[in-house]
Length: 454
Image (cartoon, rainbow, N blue to C red; front, top):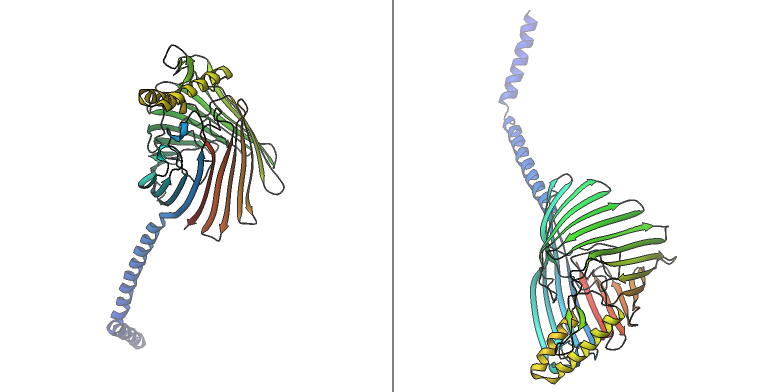
């Protein structure tokens, strides 16, 4: 009994000494300090995660352009279009992004400085400096559900496999593939994207404003509504695009099939009732003909069908062949009346006075009749290869207007100078006289530049 009492007393004294020991508060203080450090680490981690939501890059381009206007009825003496002979440009292109998983924000502000000098026409010898500050694209995108996305902003919406242009796209006639160093101006869109299955995507699109894509045309901007259905398989893909404006409805489509490891077959096109384009018609007007929308109310379908094939060679270069039938384009008879009217309008323009105003009016219509291509049959042959010796990318393209015999050669070349610098060049040479499609505006254009990427 006595031993038990001694043991109990002994352990009680040890517990008391431990409780009164001076280093006990230090343990508590250390625990508190640990909690503070842990909280600070958590705050630092949260800030680091927030920073991870942001990303961006910067491109700076400086380039010069030399071009020669052709002597044609569309631009007599270069006095109508006033095309500069020399241009020099500096462009600063930052791309900014925020992506938190459910919310995505992006903006592409731009600064552009340019110099122009004229060597032809009324502006011969004149120079001009200009600067432009703008936002080419911006976007607010919300993940409203696991398979549903809602967005609004200014975008450059591109799709389709074709190189010549994308006839299935009701919004953009320029697909940006003729010169990847020049940006396509953005337009304003609202989009609702639903992904019901890994193979299927359904998009509801409304084009609410022309944004920066203010290309001169005969018709004012119209809101366009579209539904786009996409299927993507392992060896094939296909899309349907139904679009509607106040004045017409269009069904667009494209698809591709991987026939082998080397061969890809594809097609793209659109079907539209009638045509809103202008067509030259003989009448009793002052010049004996005028530009009219003679097919606007037609019930027959005006198809644009493009078929293409790409074959990858053993050296990793790709050879592409495309043929396009342009249903709304001019027939031979319509083209003859068109060019006769253009020549008469040019003659009136050169007379000066009231006749000059009359000629300018008709030339503005013939210069943009509302057609991406003005004839019916076209072919394109292209060779494309990247990473030649890990430095060089090259594109060589010939486009042939089968109906009027004119053509265009396009070349794009880039050379990598390390990880951040790139030399690039782009050029076109047009073949055909002044009263052909490719020979009517420019004889040639050459572009040389340097790009810095960060």
